[in-house]
Each structure stands twice: as C-alpha cells, then as structure tokens.
Image (tube, rainbow, N blue to C red):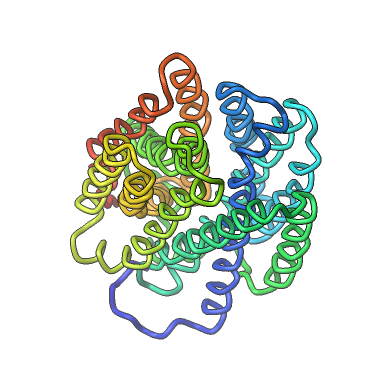
Length: 398
C-alpha cells in the first residue's frame, strides 16, 4: 500500500483513529509545555545555577535514553495504541510532582520519570500515526505534529498566564493533569486494532519483516536519521529550555515576555507542520529538510545577533518554522526503512534522537556559565547547519 497525494475518503475506523492519535499528540504537547514558563521561577525558588538547571532538564532525555528502547517491546506486546495511552497517563501524572519539588534532586527525579514516559508515548503514538497514514493512503504525519505544536503553544500560553498571575503552581499543574487524564482515557477506545505491521505488510506484499537493504547500509541509514533527529531535537528543545532564561537573564525581560520566544517558536512550528504535507509532496523530503535546517540556523543567528527582546521573539519564530518538518519527516522515514518493522525503526531513531535532548541543555548551560548564554546558544545555530547537511538521509527508500 503506497502513499498517494490523492485525497480519497478514508474508512470510518481510520477517521476515528486519526482523531484519537491527534488527541494523544495534543495531550503530549500540552503536558511539559505547561511547566516551561515556570522554569525561571523554579530556578529561583530552588536557587539553581544555569548548570544546575541544565542538568535537571537533562534528566528528561537521560530517562528517555535509558528506557526508551523499551518502547519497541512494549509496542510489540501491547500494541502502539495501548502503549501510547499508558505512557500518556504516566506523563501527565508527573505534573503535580514538578510543583511539589523542594530540592534539585526532586525536580531532576521527576523530570527523569517524565522523560521515560514521554519516550514510550512518543514512539508509540508516532508508530500508530504511521498505521493511520497508511489507511489514508496519503501523507498526514505532519498534521499530527501540528496538533502537538498547537498544544505546545496553548500549554506555553496557559503556563505563562498562570505564572504571571501568581497562581499557585500546584493548583495549575494539578488541574491540567486531571483534565489530560480524562482526555487520554476517552480516546483510548478509538484507536486501530490488529497487528502493528498489518497495513505495511499488505502494501509491501510481505516485505515488512525481510530486509531489502544490506544490514550495514540499513544501520547507516538509521544512524544518519538518528543524528538528524538529534539536531532537530536540540533545536526544538532550545526554545523550551533556554528561551525564557535568555530573555530574563540577558535581555531583562518580564516573565510574560520571556515566555514569548517559546510561544513564537511553537506557533511557527504549527504553521510549518500544517503546510508540511503539501510542501513535502511538491518539493520532496530532502529539499524541505535542507530548507528547514537553513532556516533554523538563520533564525537563531538573528535572535542572538540583534540583542533585543523583539528580535529574539522573531528569531525563535523563524527557527521554529525551520525545524517544523524535521521531526515528523525523520520519524516517518525511520518507520519506512526497508527490512525494519515500523515500530522498531521509530523507536531506534527516536532513541538516538533523544541524545539531542540529553546533550544540548547541559552543554549550553556549561558554556553559558563559562562565557554567556548568548554565546552558548550559537550551538543551536550550528545544529541547524548540521541538519542541512544530513537532510539527504530523508530520501525515500524501498
């Protein structure tokens, strides 16, 4: 079953599953982003240095890397749908624990747990989204990530409003967690049943389990995609981890204004992902990937060269537009590597990509303590250049 740009009506079960997967992406995008505007508050309350905060944030990808490979077996045993719902429930359950953290280790431990659950959710919901895409017979993967970005914008705005209004952090994060638990449970019965590779096996005449590429070449493709996803992760995470801190510490912005680089980044990511499927069909994955890496590098350079809050917001927005399609296109390519099951490909490349979430926050934090945060964030611009060079790995195969 090959994908086609022709917009033919999808079966009812596929439409229900698309709504369910979109809802899970929304829950996933809305969860941690409600915490992001509170990071400067948590930094002050717990008396953390830039390095301390970077290491605490790095606990999330550490947990994801140490346990992320469990997503493959979990998907095999329970199915991508059940795994995505279970991971979602664990993720939102961590929100009140962030508010209750009184020491650095408590914050780091909570973010570690959140990273574990997020890794399982991310792999499973993307694997299930690829199943739905095959039922639709056309590209829809970018729209799932667009929903994630919309949720991230909403979560960032809500968090900024709550922090700016002085709302107790436990009341805010506890209330958000309760709502998201209900949403996850409601959509759990709308997901696709059946074996994970049933749609792919039908379309490839049984090729889903037998390698069509030499083993070494297959590993090289997966490694290139993993490195590309690592750069994309580092770029995408920079707005969440350092956007607010950069504006408060370097540009003396208020808490509300400091949250806007993250919001601008996510808003432009949403625009890019809403247009991503049509643009990719027209120009191809490689061209879109290269353009995205270039825009990300230029956007961060703009934010850092013009040391003004308005320029920072605009620069992070351009960066968000550039990184918009890199994540979904890379995961989609990983789920269609010949000879590799979709769930395993997404899990392996997603696991490799988590290195970006692990490496970039502490690297930026240590560089910032040694020099300045403005100089340290040039690492993100360099990651955009790296994504530009690796975009050839997105070329369709099989």
